[in-house]
Length: 222
Image 1 (cartoon, rainbow, N blue to C red):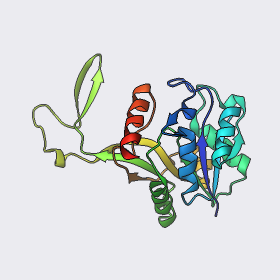
Image 2 (image 1 turned 30 degrees about the vertical axis):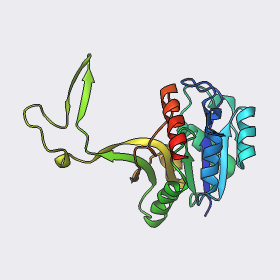
Image 3 (image 1 turned 180 degrees about the horizontal axis):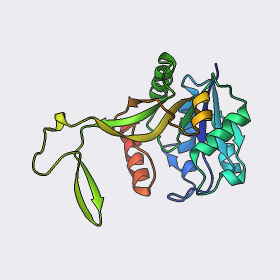
Image 4 (image 1 turned 60 degrees about the horizontal axis):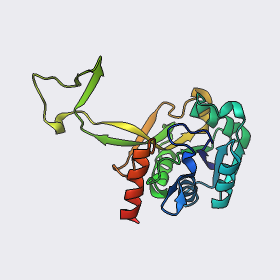
């Protein structure tokens, strides 16, 4: 069984220019993620890109490159389309596992990647395992500039521990059966399970504020 890591990294990122090549400490975001992938159970690591500089950065850190066509490097290109292109380019079989890793999750390391893979291997009924930040939040829904309770009420506020467990998809890691990805064409095919991550592991760099926070954290954590 092949376990192939795919790190999508196009050159035209919008929120932060050249985001995948931005430095965190002495390494680029892309370089850190290739390193984490190479330390994991993934036996193949690929960067999917249309950009020469990004490709060279991936090669320097020890990945292989999937040359992404320009029509899959637009602003509106879905990650799912990039993954489907990758499994065809690599000739992955239905019995293989594809592991999507995002360079923008720099604090999600090899141990959590392996936990996602192991859960998928151990539970044959699952199609995917993704990283989730779980908690017992009081959720609110915004509409027309106002917010209203979601899943609780103003009149009767439950104890936090009595709320249902909810969470958000961090985007850090998706371990996916190739057969399910081919059939359902999404990176979270049913049935999906989650691996819980902490607040630092869940950090996703989308804005300059996120990047500045990550740079402060890397100085503290080393």
